[in-house]
Every structure is written in structure tokens, then in C-alpha cells.
Image (cartoon, rainbow, N blue to C red):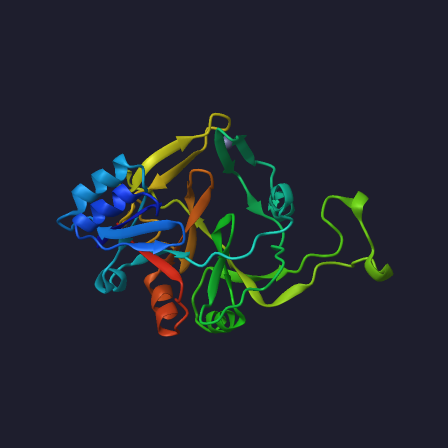
Length: 297
Ligand SMILES: [Zn+2]
């Protein structure tokens, strides 16, 4: 495993460009943004990191795992790099109240602290358009970090896989009746809408089980405690996902969500899959755009 850093800055920042030229570090200019990427174990990393920090570059990092690390993991966290579309109704994030039971929801104290704990899905997601899958089989929606959505091809294959712990829910087209705002209803062509229709080739992979995975302190970069409800969420370090609980090993399912919540502004569970699930995705070429993080027990 190596940690890959990315340093982004304005392409007008000539001092930084000169510094990189002098240090013989290659960089890319993309529109108004310039960036360079570098592994933390490269010899010039420390000097570049310090300089970028001083010049207030935007610094992000992610772990790059070897094939062996991925192939030998008993469990892995999975997420989709491809983020598309928004849950509806998008206005004022009203989808939260349409899609989830909000009885124990806590918004926190935005913009100082966003909590967003306590949502349980009660209805199907509503989204304007089905994704253009191309070679990909899974996506995630903006604002919803802990659900995967999938194409019909992936759905058919998963249905026959023998893997456990999930079902499928339709993703609905928005109706003509704006949710929660009946005063502004217009009846197009004199027809009142009779309900939301499901999209073709677009479903939610509904994950049936939630498990405490026991996040190890070594994986936690920062912990937030909500001043209102007292519930916790954390930001994670890049690298292996280190856990202290055996719950994943003992799970009767091949996919679960963590009870632990991740996020600063957001608040999402991790999605975890068994080695069997991982191999199935790879063997069926359903893993395009998916990113995996091995779990360490
Ligand atoms: Zn709270």
C-alpha cells in the first residue's frame, strides 16, 4: 500500500510552478487548476509537501493498494468514484423527508456543525434521469454516500450469484406533482399524476444489514460529537480500514453497512463486502469505477 498525494493550486501561482520545475516534479495544468501527484514514500515528497502546505495548496490523499492486498482481504470497503444525479426533490434537500423516516433525525447546527444522524430509508429514491452506464455497472448519487445504484445487467448477475444480504429497490421518475408543495400543482394536459414510475435500467442495491465494525483508533483521523444529540461520526485516515470487532467475520451476509458513520458535512455508513462479493464483481467485470479498501482485523 502506498499513499498518493495530490496537490492542487491556481495555475497563476507562478512561484509554485517554478518550484516544481526546479525540483523536476512534473505537473498538469487543467483549465485554471494546476496539480501534481506524488507518493508519500518518494524522496522529494517531504520538501514538496511542506512547500505546498505553506502556499495553501489543496492537499488530498488516497491509498493505492497492491493486487495482493486486495485479493487476500477477507472484507473490503467499497465506494463508487462515479457520482451522478441528485435525489429528488432536490430543493432544500427535501428528498431527506421523502426518502427517510426522520423520527430520530438530527440536522445539527448548520453551518457550524452538520450532524445528519438518524435516517432510515422508508421510500424508494426518486431521480430525474437514469445514468448512462457505458462500461460501468454501479454509481452513487450526489449527497448519498452510502447507497449503491446499479444497472440491469449488474442486477441480473447479482440475482444469480448466490451472494447474500441485499435486495433491489426501484428508482422512481419524479411525478408531475411536486412533493410536499401541493399549492403549486399543475395538472399537465389535464391529467393528475397517479404515482411515480420506475426507471428502466436503474435500481438501488438495498443493503439489508447494519453491523458495528469497531473502527480502530488508528483508522480514525478525527471524531466529531454532535452537540445536540451526542452521536458520533468520524473522518478516516487513508490506508487499510482497521477494525477491532469480529462482527464482519461472523456476518451471515456478503454485504453490510457499518453502524459507524463517516463524514464532516456528510454522514454516511461504510459499505463493506466479503471477499466472495469482491471476486464476483471482478470476475464479472462489474467493478469499473469502484474503489476498494481492504479491512484489517
Ligand atoms: Zn446530532
